[in-house]
Length: 238
Image (cartoon, rainbow, N blue to C red; front, side, top):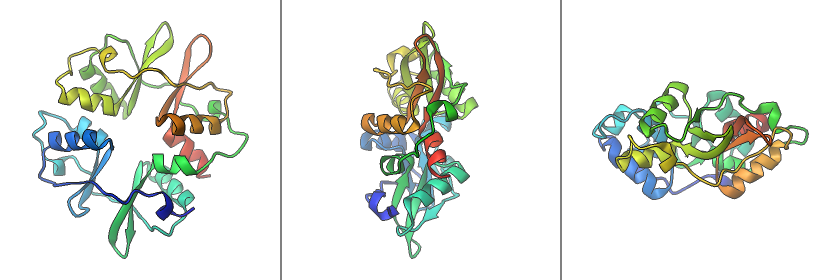
């Protein structure tokens, strides 16, 4: 399958002189995690904005990524997964004759690329995901996410997940002035989960069906780890 079959063509752009607050508001309104900056001078992600947040007045050009990675619309989708895995990024700009014509993300690829048989969640799961107590404040979670370069935190009660906090949830809380509130007030439920002996392909299907990029890994008694889009794409890219 070609990149042109899965990419998003309707690019959402932000001026490099726009404030971080304006960019974050635009992302949440459009339900996206990335914005093209100006005439492709850079790209800014939800994580860039949250990690770079001060008082919201900082300009986008101060936190954007200028190291843009491109792929042709004629390239194979699996090739995109290889590049994303190698470079540790979640998206590629799609360019034809030096003109940016779209963007392809981890989520786009996860919808169309399948995992080979014989790989279980336990083979690739992360055993030390970021966890949080329900009373932890949003501000504390922001610091923990930044320190650990994470986009998700698992809220745990009685050794099992009771909610998930994503970088998007944190971004919305920032705009709503809830940084001193407990994460129990912003976490998402229900918690979609998987087990170590489940096939990775089933985990991929859950993510696609529920439109999530992260699953806690559990047994009947406790949280064991997590698996996210990037780990699944890494297996697909082999």
